[in-house]
Image (cartoon, helix red, strand yellow):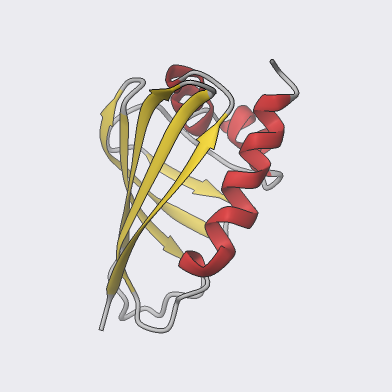
Length: 132
């Protein structure tokens, strides 16, 4: 049975900078350390982490919210896409990023239990810290 979870992190950059980097191929690649193809257009396809992740932009609210379909090469052909919602809010030290990941295939707990932190949040903190 699919599951959902929510994680938060504080990123040392304004919400618009985080939004822009997430949806830009070059910045997303530099921010995470894995090659990405991204777009700031609704409905556009994207890939990240050297093709490990793929999906589509579903809802884009500049500087505030990104909703994407999301699947990895570990999903089976019978697994439907999961969905991520990235909420960006101003915080004293940058941006409070709230990630809601839903429809995650059963057994894929690594995304919740350290994957997002190791492969997104920590590299994002380091990326933006170098730019401040």
